[in-house]
Length: 156
Image (cartoon, rainbow, N blue to C red; front, top):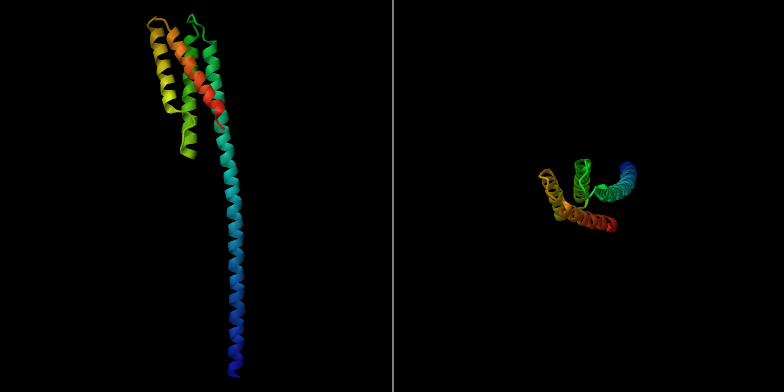
């Protein structure tokens, strides 16, 4: 009789172990499925976020060029306001490129180009305040912004 009970207990433990393994397996499958869904959602969110950064960068580049094109060659009263707006757009591009860099480890725009644009804006403002001609700085700024706009348009 002892063998009968031992055998029954062994069958019970074996069945219990099988149920436990099935439960653990089920939990693992559910966990993997949830993680896969989360990864897919995160990837989609990241792609959408990257695309929005690129769109915003293109918008800022276009807006900077548009502002500069509205600048009168004679240095009207709105010149300082327009140059300030161009500076804001260049700064926004720097921030957007930095955000993209944090996500992907690379800048969308060469930071040296943004430094050149910022320096050109500074020179433009200094010459304007001193009452000197600004045509050279405006031309340099226009060329740099055009290059920036072309780079922004080529971003995939």
